[in-house]
Length: 277
Image (cartoon, rainbow, N blue to C red; front, side):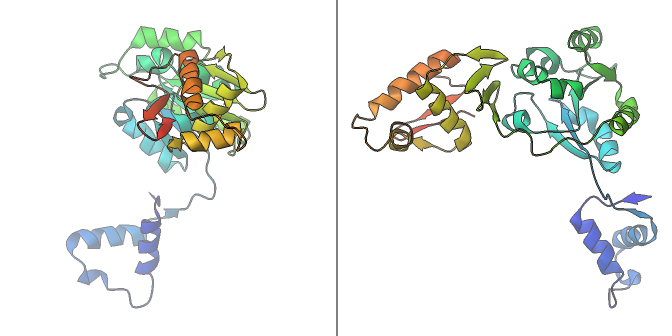
């Protein structure tokens, strides 16, 4: 049984059956074997997929699980950290958290924000660490998963566990909630104009909130002082660009950020500001 994962494989299969395609005998030995395999093996085309997000700083240790999930027609997305910008606004059918990596279930600064979302917590499973692996943390990993009310499964059990769970649950809305924006361990609820860091609310002024919103919506692009003054203070404002620096300094202080070693807002000397990497 053979599963086609790429457009290139599908195109190769189609070309092999077209009139005038070179005979197998004209190919070298490796190409001949591949062509014969493609032409004679049953082909599975995935009519629909369910999205699985796997979060692990060591995805190479879980390559067999990733392979099996992909072969079973799941759309597998891999993230190294829970505080990834895209992950906060991404909706998935299941989230697999590497229980063998201590920083995924405990010290990762974005985990509390992630697990505070009931929809994500409901769809999360902790991957039991394997004995002998470099990331093995047995008892500590089990206790962390239990503390957060997460079910656990070993990698070889995960395919069955996911299949059983998804049979009972409808697919999620992949568009997600457009009112929720995130960056690292920061989450902005634009409906309530509320900002949270690691699940704890931060009180910002309206101007500080709008500055942070502009930075996150820019997705890392540099924003000049002039651009921010026009967008936030308006064309009728006659102050100088230092007002931007004053408010950015105040915003950084409330976020616990540093201009020297920024985690959230980076200064682009002589130009303006951008989100820090």
